[in-house]
Image (cartoon, rainbow, N blue to C red; front, side, top):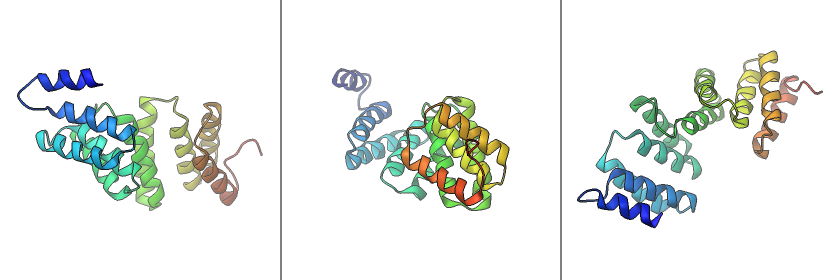
Length: 179
C-alpha cells in the first residue's frame, strides 16, 4: 500500500480525497480508529459529496459503537449516490441499526435496506439472517423460515447474530423450520 499511497500522492499538488480514503481504510483494518477518523475528516473536507467517504465514516462509527452517527453517515451515503463501492455494507449495517432501534417505522426501513443489500449480493448469510429477524418481528412465518434456511445454508458465521435469531425464534414461537 506504500506504492499505492505514493502514486495517489503524485497525481496532483496535494493529497487527494482517494488518498485519504485508502489511508483511512488501512487504519480501519488495524482498528486504529482515531487515525482513520483524521483521514476521513481530511477526505470529507476535500470532497464533501463523496459517498465513499461518508460510507467509510459510517463504518468507522459503526465499528466504534456509535450507531446513531453511523446511521446518519449511511443515510447520507445513500442520498448522495446509488453506486458507492461500499453500498452493500452500507445497506447491511443500516438495516442492522434500524433493527436494533426496533421502532415499527424503522423495521420497514430495515427491510428496505436489507432487500437492497440482498439484491446486490444474495449470497450474504448476514443479510438473510437480518431479514429473518425482520420477518419474525413482522409475524411473517413463511418468509422468516425461508430467510433463516438461506442464512444457515450460506453458513452464517456471526455467533452473536445467530444467538439473537434463536432468542427471537423462541419468543415468537416460529422461524426455525428444523424444530
